[in-house]
Amino acid sequence: MAKSYLLPKASKQFKSNLHAHTIHSDGALTPQQMKALYQEHGYHIIAYTDHNVLNYFKELDEENFLALCGYEVDAYTQNSYGGFEKTCHLNLIARNPQTAKFIEKPAIYSVDSINDTIEKLYQANYIIHYNHPGWSAEEPADYLNLNHISAMEIYNHGCEVETNDGDARNHYDIILKHGLHWNCISTDDNHNHNTLPNNTLRTETDSCGGYTMICAPTLTYDSVIQALDDGNYYCCMGEGAPEIYHYYIEDSKLVIDCSPVKGVFVKSNSIGARFHRTSTTDSITHAEFDLTTLRGDEPYLRIELADSKRRMTFTNPYYL
Image (cartoon, rainbow, N blue to C red; front, top):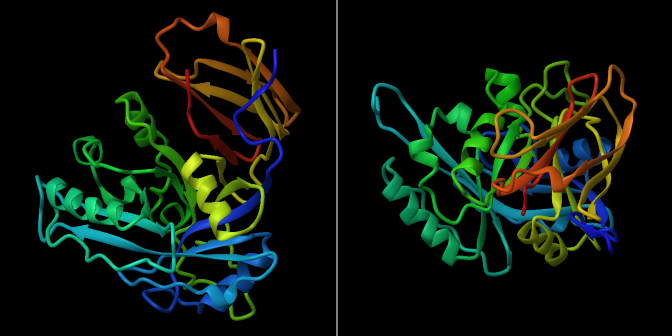
C-alpha cells in the first residue's frame, strides 16, 4: 500500500511567527529590528499583525525571509459581561497583499457583531485565526459560534510569559470535539518590551517561544498562503521543540518520524489519549499506531509530541 503523507514529503519547512507587533501599534521594535532578531533564531517568516492597522513590509523580503501582510482585530466588552470582562482577538493574513483592504473592528462585543466583521474579512480574502482564548477569558459559547475560522492558537507564548494563560490545548480539544474543523497554530504575539538593544533576549521574553513550521515547496508568498490554506504545517511550544520529519499512513498504520522525544500522544474525541507511546528519556524517534483498533466513532486524530524539557509539538487533525 502506498504511503499517504499527512505532511507533504517533498516540501521544505519554514519556521514562522504568525502573530507579531511592532512600533506601528504597541510593540517596541521596528519591523526591520524584529526581522533581525527572528533571523538570529532561525525564522524564515513573520506575519506582521499590528493591532487594527494594516501593513505590508514587502521591502523586508529576501531569499531566506518572507514578510506576510496582515493585522489583528479585536472586540472588547465595555464593562462586565455576564460577571466578568472578555474580549475576542482575530489575526488576519491577507491572501493577496496587493489587494488587501482594512476592515474596521466590531463596534461592540457580541457573537453576532464579531461574526458580521468576520464575514467582511472572509469576503476580503483574509485567512482568519482565532487568538489566545485563555487570555481573552472567552467561553465555549462564544468561540464555538464563530464562522470562517481557519485555525486557533493552541499556544501563545506572549500570554504564557506575561500572564500564564497561553496554553489553550483544552480549548482546542473542545473545538474539535464539537465538530469544528479548525487547525492549530503556535505564535509569539510578541511586543518585545523586554528585548535588549543588541537583540539578545532576557530570561523571560515574549519572543521565539511559539512557532509554526510551514511545509511549502518554496519561500514565496503564494506558496506559503497555499500551505496555510491546505493545513500543511505543524506547530511548536518552546524554542527547540520536537521536529517532525515524516508523518504518514501506510497499511492502516499511523506513522511518525521525529527528533528524539519522551512521549507521543494521539488525541481524538476520547478521554485522554487514544494511543500513546512513552519513555523515561528522549529516546523515541519513530512511532506507529494500528488504526484497525479504533472503535469506529473517532472523527479525527491528531498527534502531540513532548520531550523531557516539556517542549511540545502539535499536528493538525487528520479526519478519518
